[in-house]
Length: 191
Image 1 (cartoon, rainbow, N blue to C red):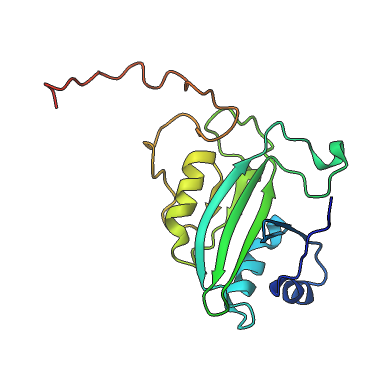
Image 2: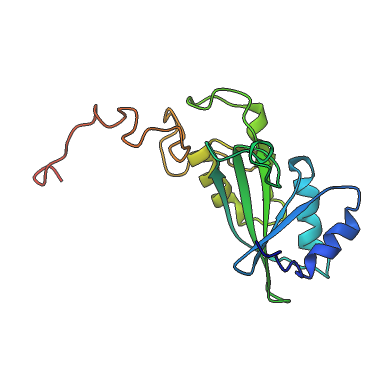
């Protein structure tokens, strides 16, 4: 496999500023991803936003991925951090015409089939850096159950508040858990 061309101009700046941390950088189809430790995520994101050499002034998206049943890096001799969930931030610097994906990994400590609050699935919110993260962080919380500490209004955005699970987790059944069976069918005449 050919080595990626990791010549993204932001990577040396991050490494210089956070020289004590270990990072993983990957590239796929000319998209650079920087994998950062979860405990340093907010500090690194603040640097990427406010350092004039980086100037990532637009948070395009916040999303998550469930890596359930993927090979673990230690099992498959693959590089990279272990974790079931990844939270991915899509950053854009409009002044420098640059894009950078920042990923952090989370590994649950509790059973993930329910609607319980797992302390390992908490991240610090970036709404103080990019106010536009408010809705996208709520969507990640609603679909995956990852909570963002310091978020101004963290509640479900797509499903009702007492919905019993997080439907984009891969251990959620494709047909649901019988949430729809108790609802009245509305006919055309009822509408």
